[in-house]
Length: 463
Ligand code: ARG
Image (tube, rainbow, N blue to C red; front, side, top):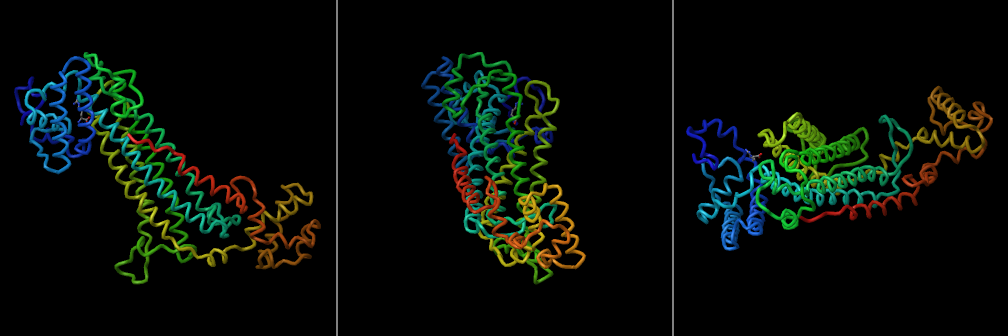
């Protein structure tokens, strides 16, 4: 096995150690970014007076051929290749001859891998942004279709106050706006060029790093070579963003699992998004939602794993850092499946307004009853107490609030008047919450408009 760094070694690497050390099985995914970075570096070396334009042309053409081999899946790995960087350079030199050996002048795999990984993540984030926008649009469509459909709202999973389907669905939309903003911020912090930092102390050749940054789609140049090759906070940032998306989708999943149960029956999952039981013929299982809920666990795990790897690492590059890529790739792959599946599930969801209406019992309007007393001049705390007594009275009669007569109510408080029955009106309760973010039809329409604007306002920067 020939190693690119084999010069100072007399003995061979142990076979198991080669396998242990190698990252090719996963970092081959970086081939395009590695090649793009190398092409820019070759041009940069011309500017620095290291390569002639003719030599750089030969290197760039050779790299283009290497890329073509990857794309046509004809690239042949050699036993000595330990990572994507050594594999590409080895093949380049086979193609272009000795001039290929000049490419690594003034560069290290340390700044090379940081550059390629950052480039990959920038593109990955753009890809995820598009998937997230699709899910957001599915939520918006569902909200718009049933904007004012009344349903019970819950706190502690107990009946609380009436809300609408549109309001509920948009509650799962806004977290995704923040998730996308977070990813956009991660992208901005990732778009800082490490190339030119070399192994740790900076390259000894006068390469124009600002030009390199611009040529590769970075928006800034790292200011400290030691920091540039050693930190992976951008990867951890991404994993936090990914974990948060996972958590948000797990909450949506959990609630839809409940809503699709026989007990609730508020929604029905499309056959395309549910599965059956091998034993119980009647079953229709929300596996898709359960998996989405479950995958949040591994997304949190990827973040925890990388943070633990990074803790206490001495400056600058340590091989521990090779552990950075698998969790990031895995988080990306997980979300690239989960998010579109969720978008399809939401888009195909069937609602059952009758089942929702059946749960709109008068108890959900107890707060409105207290508000009625407040409007008649009772301090809220007292009004709350009075209505509590009314609820207790109804319970003792095994009746609902609307079964109580006016004299029942007046026995609890003389402040109840004949107009009190008007309180027990779900549309009126919904309409009374006119604040921004409330359940009134106008507020919901405004919220929907704001949501539509928000989908398009998170910028998706193309690398
Ligand atoms: N495969 C390595 C990684 O992913 C590339 C950098 C290797 N650098 C080194 N000095 N051994 O981190």
